[in-house]
Image (tube, rainbow, N blue to C red):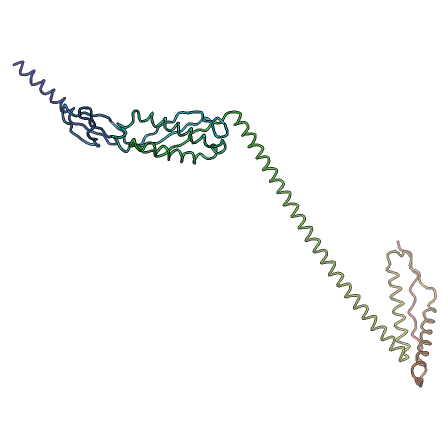
Length: 334
């Protein structure tokens, strides 16, 4: 009785062991390879799968999700013999579990070493300034090379990123001094441009002021010339009228003309800023004598015109107009 119970228990345990060794559950994002007597036969996808007992077994459990591998820091010599420290990261994804399992041993280490060697090749073909300023170009070139190299392994390289680029301390100090000098140069150039624009603006303003001043002088000269022309025309008309009066023997008009000129000259003398004292003639007889002399000239002019003299007027010639009352003696100006 005891033997049968033990046999039954052993049979149940063996069934459970056999069940667990035959039935396999593959989780999502994973794939298992199946080996029969040590040889790859097939790949199990996510879900429940059954193996042939005592013949098949699980070979490799492959992660099919995207993975991130770290590229160790290394020193790289650039094209211009500068030493820089470079590290990075690479994003990979297994596309074929069988090839990734059986075509390369230690896949993460292989990809890491592949990235390091190609990173030295790409950075070594560039100068330091290009390495520091063209990270995107380095990433693109590395991605093309790594993706092509890992394709036979059933692995897809999705992205490669350079994390740090550290030049030596002496180069860093030189770059800092260069940056400072460049900023100072830009500041000097900006200040010079500002002074240049200010000088141009001032010159333009002076130019416009000179143009406006010249236009004003031209307009004033034109107005002065026009006024002198009008004055000359008026003087010519007055002279013509005097000539006509002399020809007609009109002594009154002549006397009026001479008296007007005398008064204008005296007024101009009084307005002169250089004159401190105005001198008034004590006798106005000289003016009357001048007017009488002009009357005699008129008579001579009439005798010279034509052979027949002009008939004398019936009435006696009018007396010359009373000369204007002489002004009071001027008091010296203060």
